[in-house]
Length: 243
Image (cartoon, rainbow, N blue to C red):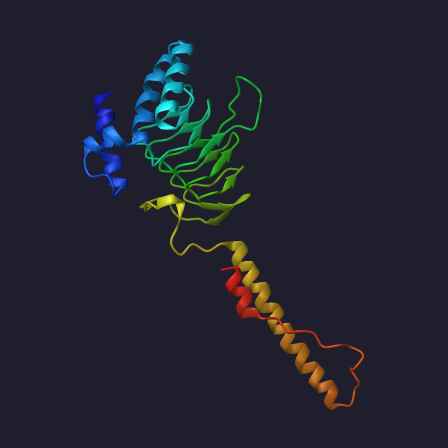
C-alpha cells in the first residue's frame, strides 16, 4: 500500500508543475486523498462489506468533492487534478497512468443492475475538465477526451475526441505518446472545421465564377436586370468564425 502511495505522489509531481513536494501532495491534493480513500472503500466492497465501503466513499466525497463508487476499479498512478465535481460510477474501470480533470463524469446510461454500465479507460487516457463519458464502452490507450466533450461511443487508442456529441479529430500512434493537459492536442485539426473551410472556399470560388458569367452576359447585351445582385460571401470572416 505504501509503495502505491509513493508511486501516486511521484506521478502527481511529474504531471503537475505546481506540486512542490510529497508532503504538499499528501496534505493538499484532494485527488490523491480521494484515491487513497477509494482503496479502503474498494477493499471493503471486495470483501462484501457494502455499507462500510459506501460510507468511506461518502466521507471521501464530503472531504474532497470527488465521488468514486467503491465498486469502481482504479489503476495505479491515476491522477485526479483539482478534482472537484468528479463522479466515477460503480462499474467504471480506470487504467494505470490515467489523468482526470475537474468536473468529469464517468457515468452509465443503463438502469440494469449487475451489468457493466460505465466506461473503461485504458492506460494513459486523459479526460479534460467537464467532459462526460457516458456508457459501457472503451476509451483506448493514451486517447484524449477534450474539455466539455460529451462522449457516448468508443475512442480508438491514441485518438483525440472533442465536441458534443464528441467526434474523433486526431488519430496517432500510441508509442511515445506525449502528455497533453486537459486533453488538448497542440495543432490538432478538427475534421468538421476542415470541412467547413473547404465549403467556404468552394462557395467563394462559385461567387467569382457567377460574377464572371454575369459580366460576360452584360457585355453580350443580355439583360440580367430581373435577377437582383446579392452580397458576395466574406470568406475571410467566415473562416475566422470556424477556426
